[in-house]
Picture 1 (cartoon, rainbow, N blue to C red):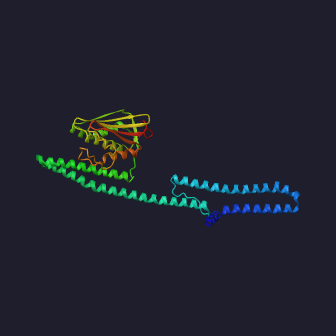
Picture 2: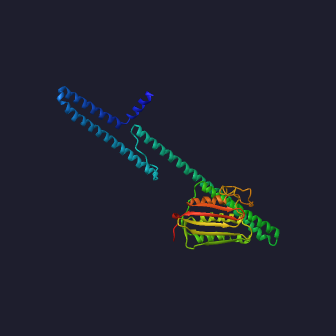
Picture 3: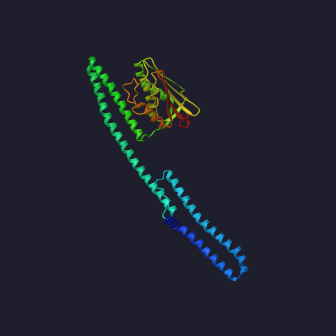
Length: 356
């Protein structure tokens, strides 16, 4: 234990400013001691002078030395805080001057080391994201090219089939499966992009009514074929600051989910309103509803309910919709009653949108 105390003392004295402070105080004490000895040798009548002059002078001198030392320390700390703020503001080259010895400068040196480590991690993360970006781009190209070719081949077969009903039937089935594969591939790539944090949203002021009409048109043909109806309701003037492509993708995924779980004659409503602090987009259906056991899990990727009648979905549409919504600073909630239908609610803070 004594060795530890001596080590601490030696570390304190390693700083030249502290050594200078101790030297000054020591010199002051020695000088006052000698002066006091001189007064004592001269006679007891000078003792009062010694007390009223020498001791206050020594106190003032010590206070002056301490003030000078702490002023330098304060300047050093202020410079360090300034450099830390520079680093937080984005200047990755900001560093604290820590060339001297002592405990304080050792701490500042460790802060510089931490900054260097963070820079290294940021560079590694940047390279990893670039690698993922390139890989996703390559995968997208490699998958989309053969799918596009297969669609072309199907078109040619359809034209050449003439009245061969069996061939045309197989071509129709083939096209449906290719559409499913394309949708699956696109969802997988989009999920991978969000996981890699390489999505850059292009936010612009968009008319909500126009976006919801685009979503309705996208599924109008399917709804008509299946005997279902998509209804739109909301103010035409409302706007939202968002990435139009991604946000319509999110709402579209929820609408697709509603169509998947609504029987013939069912209705899917898309409504949008602006409250005092939020923009609300609601997708409501009167379909089969969601089992209470599944409500907590429906936004998990690849989740398949044991109660679901859907044999085609793989569980990517809703998680992707939630990721897109959260990337816009919003939230996606669901309320459902088994056999009564489901309601999905998109909420976006008011500060992310403005009126035209």
